[in-house]
Structure formats: C-alpha cells, structure tokens
Amino acid sequence: MAAGIVAVTTPAARADGDPASDYLLGQDNFLPFDAKIPAAKAKQLTDLLTNAARAGFKIKVAVIKTRYDLGSITVLYDKPQKYAEFLGAEIFFAYRGRLLVVMPNGYGYSVGGKRPPRRALHPLAGLAPPGPSSTQLVSTALTAVRRLAAGEGVRLDIPQAHRGGQRNRDRIIIIAIALTLAALIGSWMLVRRLRAARRT
Image 1: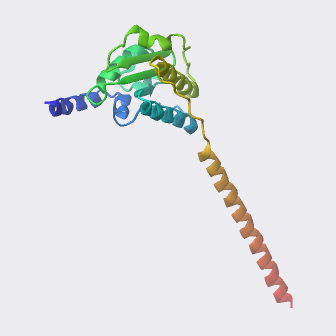
Image 2: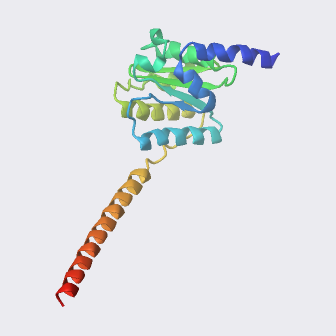
Image 3: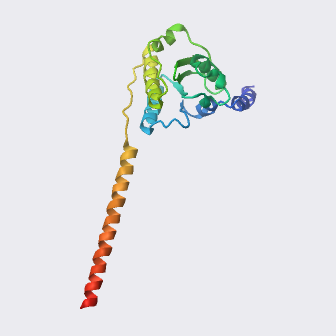
C-alpha cells in the first residue's frame, strides 16, 4: 500500500514544475539556480543543517529569490508561509519533518506540510525580511535555523565560512605563473649558450 502511494505521488510532485520539491528529496537545502551565492556561504548552510540533524533538530531549507525559482508555482511567490505548507505537502511522502522557506519578503515554516502551532513560529517573529540580496537570503536562513532550533532547546553555532577553494585556485595560478617564468628564463639561457657556442 505504501509503495503504491509513493509511486502515485512522486510523478505528481515532479509534474508541477516545482524545482525545490525535487531537490529536497535528496538533500537538505534548495538554493536559487542563478543567484550567484558565494560557495563559502552555501557551504555554511549545508554544514549548519548537518550539525542540526546531528543535534536532533532535523530541518530542510528552501531559499527562494525570484518567482522563477518556483517553477510553475509562481502564484505562491511573496507568500512564504503558504509555500512552506505547499512544499511540505509535496515532499510529505519522503520527508515529514521541519521545513523552512526563505523569501525576500519573509519566512515560512511548516512541519509535515502543515502550519505548526504559534509558539513554534515565534522565533521567526522578530526576524527582519532578508531583502533581495542573494548572500543576505542565505545569511538570514542561517539565523532563522538557529532561532528555530533554540526555540526547541537546541543550541547551534553558525559554521565558519572557509574560502579554501579560492585559496587553492590562487595557489595554482601562482604556481603556473612561476613555472611559466622558469621555462622562459631557461629557454633564454639556452639560447644564449647556443649563440656563445657558435661564436667560439
């Protein structure tokens, strides 16, 4: 019976063109496709959600910047709470837990596709809307997750942002330049030796 429900529900969830409902089946966060969110900031969110799950506060997050991030569900843009309930219902067959939606104008929170009691939403009440900035959307998602966790007695620290990837790329560039210069100098010295040998 359960297998039959999954088989029927999965195509329905994907046929509506809602990208987040597909992504959140296999991972804990959905980020806008073309928002140019810094890799370090995105990793912060991923790491925070991993730490939250380990601490017993499992939660998924969907960051929505523009109405295009909703696929064919654009009618729910600027309606984060309604979208949180809709999205939670979409993935209910695979995930029935906490779900946070972050939009430029505010936040939505559902549990199992339903609006939780008022006390569960209270931690988000004093949080200002993030606005249209891609980086700020993720930053406020980090803050919102921490507040929601704290509301249930779970303390989470925001992971440090590491820029190791950028440092590695910089090192590779520097090494490549050094090797190129060494090759040029070596070629120049070889040419000089050959010319000196011809003269003698």
